[in-house]
Image 1 (cartoon, rainbow, N blue to C red):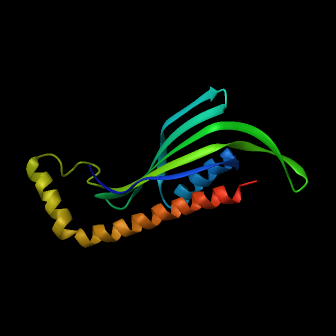
Image 2 (spheres, rainbow, N blue to C red):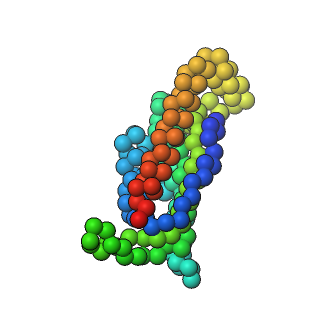
Image 3 (cartoon, one colour):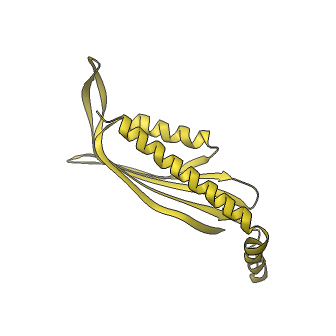
Length: 165
């Protein structure tokens, strides 16, 4: 598989009160609504004196065809996570407080089934195919991938801005 890294390690960080469960659901819905299948590559949590610490690593993929797929990797870290109760509209609400940091990368995965990697000759053919035959298509898809990447970042920013208390 050939990875053409488009955007790597965009960092978004906020220390505030937010609902971790709703954040998780929002991310899940965004990937689902945009046609991505995703899986959790790693999940770690530990208790620290300052609160719970989480490290979550997701990889989301959307197949474009039998040769190209979009891949978005979302790594998020939560530190100092504690449950808190706040008053909202006269009612007590249970939520979370802590620092959340996202690192988001995106790339096009070409020949993701390694059909063109069986020999040096095939690898050479793949490079020519990418450079001369489908170059314009790849450039168009890169633009689309950047748009989806920015959409995800905007969604996360909006969520964090809306859930400030």
